Image 1 (tube, rainbow, N blue to C red):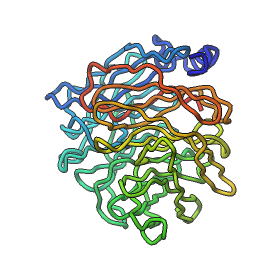
Image 2 (spheres, helix red, strand yellow):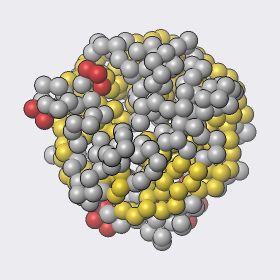
Image 3 (cartoon, rainbow, N blue to C red):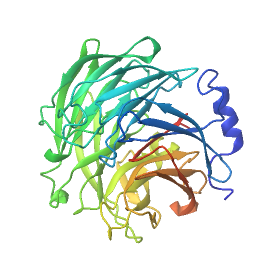
Image 4 (spheres, rainbow, N blue to C red):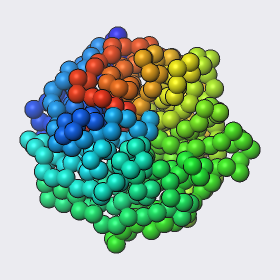
Length: 396
């Protein structure tokens, strides 16, 4: 297990970088969106990660006083944390609010929301905070649009505006903000396309829509879902919410928005299927290294798991590196995948954490050549629809 996660020296380093945030908790911290459907019982649960063996220890519960739906899209992002750890937000997908918590005590500071934004169609929604911490975007599968929120004192949210993509109103859930804070990316799975908004002083501007449906590789359908960005904000990688195709999609990001729609196969010898959540290693995000793909089986009999790929930004390419690792659980439903200490050079080291519906987090170690081994499983006693986790601080 020595190769499992980051070295203890890394924990000391990131702790030194965060004098206020999570000050009383050993870093790194995993924050799970519990999505509890019991009225008023929703929360997010924080765990400390043992960087030697991958065990998680419960350290805090952030009670929202709201209500979840108990599930939703596999690529949902139900929590958001500012890059300095000063603010945390948690979605209440059943009661249609976003709850704010502020450091250093992480006491609740308020709720903001729109009637029906998450709950109307029973699919929930997602939130993403800008790296600079100044604004937050919600993907609303209930009202079929996105919303922009300003971040104010004590992390309280103020509604700015709602936007319906030019590509069409859709059951929008995952949303992403580019690392340079200048763009918002919105997958439109039912339209097999993605939308790009530029960020300005007065709000968001719809720049363009990029379609995948016309590509020959998308004959069985290409339905973009979860996403991740390169550090330079020039490439975005999407998962594909379909049972008919085992591939991920990419797009370039530039002054004109999104361009160069491409599709890359992630077929693997382990038989894991349905790639929903891509997540870069440190080297991958820098433009040349491992890219981890979370595979959600959708139903019994279709394997779930993780597949390691090698990503290069220029020329843009994704190839399967490891053989994939099947991650069994009672429902085969895998949610978010996040890395801790994974450099992604191909020589091993570091690890992954995988959200598993309804209430567990699976630890996975990374070996050389992209091969993986299963670590311990941790149960979140507060969760009822656990599909979303975040790690603070982001060690890549």
